[in-house]
Length: 283
Image (tube, rainbow, N blue to C red; front, side, top):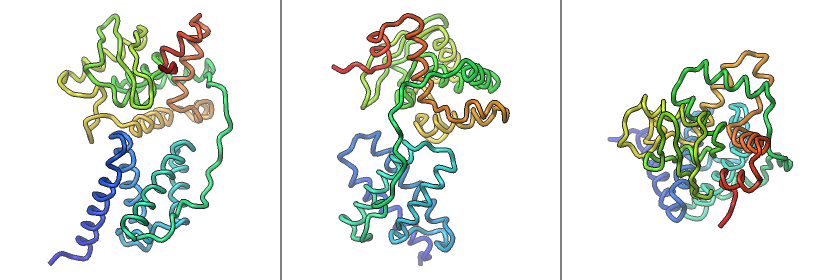
């Protein structure tokens, strides 16, 4: 006879499966992100004191969600990431209310996150650039060097790097180009600068599996997720000395892309050239 713990696990698995069906109208990437967030949330709630390692929908209270978002902040996740998580939890709660009847109130209602003021594109200082580049070099990891190069030397979005496919990657030791883009961004062909081409080519040579779908590999899935790239960048910064960390602590991977645009402008690119290269132009 199955134990109560086994039954609880099966109930959660079934609930997540039904939620996946509820999301079936959304884009594949959005579905994946929602499901990862919900699974992480469920696991975190189950480990809260008094929950005995099990998740029950009524545990999803406003206080619980506030504590979870505070936990993410302590882990170093940005306000934008937490806003996306809150939106996902709200969607999951509506599913529990409308489809399952397991929740009476949306726990995200009344939770306010700080609003980020509009800001100009970020330009890194010479010291910040030097520290980040030296950290990548010290790490000595081909994958990390390629990730950094595509952000810093090619201005690619995290999603574009995560979903970059082998068939869209054309690089040699001296030159190369990529066909990049992802759902919400403009697809485009970009010629890689030498500083971006060499690390990417070295990584491809080190991995060797040319038949795989995605360029950046992960031990847990067929591609390196957006969350994993942000996690890698946080770990990279954590390798810095205390003095260096004070200089680079608030830099995000997205800032590498913005800094590339600023450096390109100073190198003589027109606004239109920068916009085309970074995929800002519509049409």
